Image 1 (cartoon, one colour):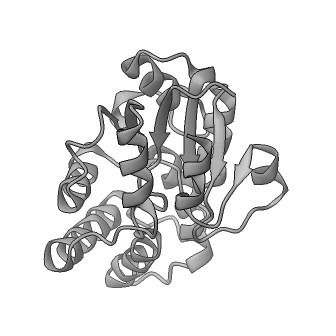
Image 2 (cartoon, one colour; image 1 turned 45 degrees about the horizontal axis):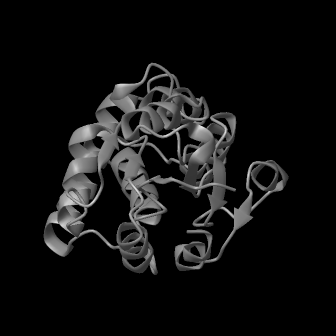
Length: 214
C-alpha cells in the first residue's frame, strides 16, 4: 500500500450531519403534507440529488414535489448550521492534522452541491485545509460511479491507486473501490453490510484510527 494522497467524503465522514439531513428531509416533506419514512432518506445517503430523486419519489405519491421539498430541506440545514455551526465528527481534526503534517495532499469528494458544501466547510474552517474540493456538479455521474473520486485524484495529481478514500456510505465505498483506491469505511448511520464490507479495505469506528495508515 503506497498512499500518497487522502480523499474524504464530507457528510457522515467529516461532519455529523447525516441525522440532521434525515430530520430536515422529514420536516420539509411534512410541510407539504407528506409522511416521508426515515428509511427512505437513509437509502439516499451518499447519493447526489440526481440519484436521490427517484429513490425518495418511489416512497411517496405521484404528486410529491421533490425539488421544492429539497429546497426547504437545504434551507433548514443551513439555518441549523448558521445558528450552531457544523458538527465535526470525532477524530476528524486529529486525522486531518496528521495527514497535513505528513505532507499528504487532500481533497473532498462530496455528493453535496457546491454552495451547501462550501458553507459547511467554511463553518468548520476546513475550506482552506483541503487542496482540492470536488462537488456533485463537477461530474456527470454521481456515486456509486467512480467519477468524483477519479476527478479528485486527477486534481491532486496522484494516481487513484495511491489514494486513500474515506467514506461512510455504500454508494461512496463502491465509487472509491471502483476508482481503484484504498478504501476506509468509518460507519455513520449505516453499519457495514456485506456489500459495504466487500468495498472496504479497512473499517474503523473512528477516523482517528485511520491515522495508522498514513
